Length: 143
Image (cartoon, rainbow, N blue to C red):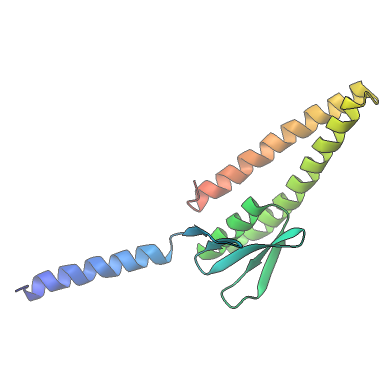
């Protein structure tokens, strides 16, 4: 039979584990999208909706990766970074659109030199944005 000291050790261990999991990010794929702890992410028309456990929409994102990152920031209570994530989502959407447009113009040989220069600059900016996203993901334990 366990002694009081052993029971106390077990109880302390269990409490520590519960505390650790409260702040950890748990990402689950669902049939409609993703679930990050108590937050749901699902495609709603042309955007990804981030909703809380009650179903209230918190934010909208063009990129699912950014929606997952925002949910993880909510879980970690890093609310100061949420505005940056929303701005990055918008910038990412614009840069991807620009890249597609420039590639299309180049393939049609329309002002090829001008659009190659613009494509090069856009590709560089996209790489920079992806590095920023990767750093943010590391900060909340998604990588």
